Image (cartoon, rainbow, N blue to C red):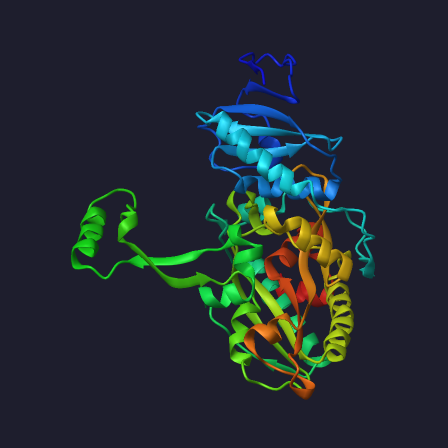
Length: 436
């Protein structure tokens, strides 16, 4: 390793595939759109990867890099996929950062790529106008959205009307296509349910636990008095916070499974509802594109394998009809989930090889003005995993198969405004008359 304190842009020397240099504020800032960066001075470490990675793995590395260390601002993969730039915060223990980053990178580069991406549905919009750039800023400027800055947004006016219309329209399409049972589930879920669902094993970085002040008079009074005259909120001491095993729900379908225990699905059934979903995204938060708290219109189907696969196939028609109604470019293609680094390679390989997950991708413009595919929903097959874990059956008492379709309401809103802009006349008449 070599260290250079020069900030004039000169290329530092390298040794053993790693080098470090000081960076002035702003390096990497354009790519992250990050939060609270003005107080930080950054250093950059360059590390050679043990093997080159393709663009998909590179994207996973950059996205998950916010969970490697609190001392790391972001990790960027070089264009050739053979090295990374680690942006560290001022005061970081560089030895510790390097060690953690290398463990993370070694886990990520084990991912196997090369699987053929299969497109099962594609829809082309009729609107010939250009895509609109800077949708989040424009919505805020018009007073239709308020961004709290922590992955939560409030919205009103045409945004609220559009969100409701998307939810109502897909619910209407589900009712027409499937004999759905309407349902409602809470926004909180028991930790043991998430454990049974495999979420702690697959996505531990996204979990949000709920805590309360311990049932202790002195602890509660201390918390009350601390906040009685303070200008800013003061949190209780860590030892005074109790977690009783409740979490914010990170996937719309999870609260449904405990309610199916002991039930027989020899005749397949479908359920639908609007779920409130919470996923901790750290510094990946980005307006309507990536929220901590968001809404999902869910379709969940249970029965034998043939029934579940037939519903999955018919769901493609529903997605196509939805895209046509809102007149947006959209396609459904095979994909994998963003699993936590240490188990990502194995789980992604299984998902890709079995083709059990498809993403509903809608093209939008990113913060850099470049076109990108935004995953606005997914269509998933679970096999009999949940049937085994929560003990509900299909024919002959065998564990039932299940599957689900989740549509992210706020992402569909963002995509629609991106593709149609803010001139009402560019929107389909049936939509325009409802939201403007």
